Image 1 (cartoon, helix red, strand yellow):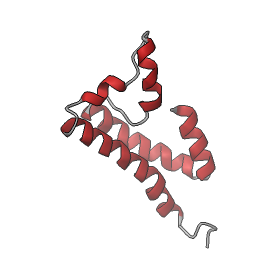
Image 2: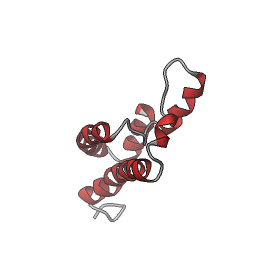
Image 3: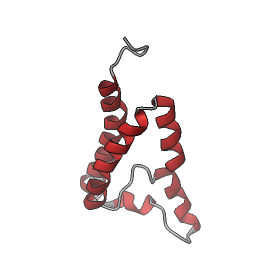
Length: 97
């Protein structure tokens, strides 16, 4: 038995799947509740006001096609990084975003 009491697939589903689910929930809310108003908080090149997007960029996407095209690579690469453990996944995710 592993120290966390969870198997590797359960941990991947919880951490990586939960992170991806959060991105989808934000996009659903953005589309239906905010009428794509959250897009204004993304990264805007050469704009000082666009720097707030650095904080929000990990969960904001340019639209449904952007989110859909990022979902499978996020799951696959997230699972691969998780094979080195949760601390490594947190560090890699924090560094990349």
